[in-house]
Image 1: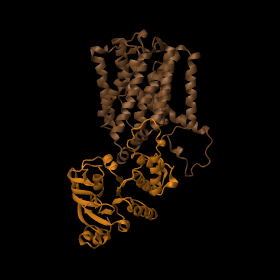
Image 2: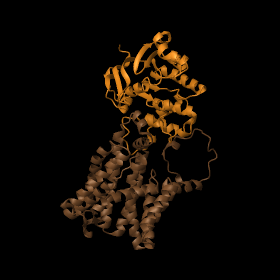
Image 3: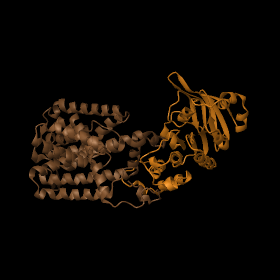
Length: 253
Length: 339
């Protein structure tokens, strides 16, 4: 199984009496788009927070490329080539679009403990930032303060900042959250482009988007993995229909 | 990212020239007062690096100011050393070590806890100097003016800080250098990271930066510069006392930063000037001058949320003709993104 990039074993996280993630054992294969779906409160975002080092797990292990990263902090996980975008837009509002991506790109310098030369002399950082802006389709917004951009553009920047760190594995927490259908189409296109040379772990509520880009789906309910399979398998699964998809037909969630 | 508009630099350069020629015609009392302000301005700038840029509201910054002053006093009064080539390195190392130790604990907290822990450390140091017999007790110590720091090359004395005119120009040069140094640091990759930490610490961490390390380094830089200001203060007054580390002093310098405008390096300079000059003026008019000062601070905080610097910046922007393409988001030069 050399093509497994990330795997979890019995991963759990509790908040007081609440078990948010409950014994999740999953493996994610290199080059695939693996979507995680499930009703609200299923523990999807908590799972991403565990994988990205934002939260320490209560139990279980996480291995990245075979190496144990269970205790790694968010910054360490990022430096290992794991990028992460947030469900709630988490950008630097007062910075321009370019400055946002710059900070992402600069994190790939061997160190930013450099005090005397202006940041702008680091051309490789600038090149990385520009590539990321171009990839996420915001070139025309380069010098616009992030806070002044439209919501959809801020969501694109959210992904762009992550791309500026040139990650191999992307953890995307609802990249389409709150987007209009036109904007959503653009981001789905972006996800498809990224899928060509990245591994994606994707949380998303928009089922059309998920079915369009995902190679593999995992359904989570109440912190547990209900089922993992291809789009067809999940669509055909009776358990899933009852727990989740059926839910939607019966009036939404 | 905060940018300093060009007219501000022009004004600052004019201000530096004005300070340079002031002693030629100025009243002796006010020349000395300006020297005091310049030392205070360096101290306040060092705090602004923490409060205005890294988002770390320290309420114990006087600790490093005091450590710098006491290190200077110890070398002069206990060891009879006046050579700046010895005093300065000792002062800087002492302040840096103090900042490293206090910072190492403090940056593990944030918000109100950070304020409290820095205050607590500063109070501990206050009583360390206040209570230990070695440090001359509550009344402090007067340093012999002839023993004040000097820089000599062989037998030729180049700088003698006991000469008030020499001190004035040394303080001015240090103010300019400190401003330049902090400007350079803030433009560096390090500067970008600490500004990012203030705006959105969580995201900076997610992008792969060890936030704690960057905060600690910022804390040490600020503490070292504050220690340097303490060295200047001891040399200026030839007097060192526990009051240098008191929480009043930490509060005063914080007020200067707020008043002047945090997150701009020239703000603390303006704040120091306005506060000291106003204090001098008002205390000459009424014995209730502290009340008036308090009212002034309240008014500035209420009506000038970006401090005096914010007001100056707005006025300076008006001096420039408005750009025709404002509001039209177009690609501009890379340089536009520089701080």
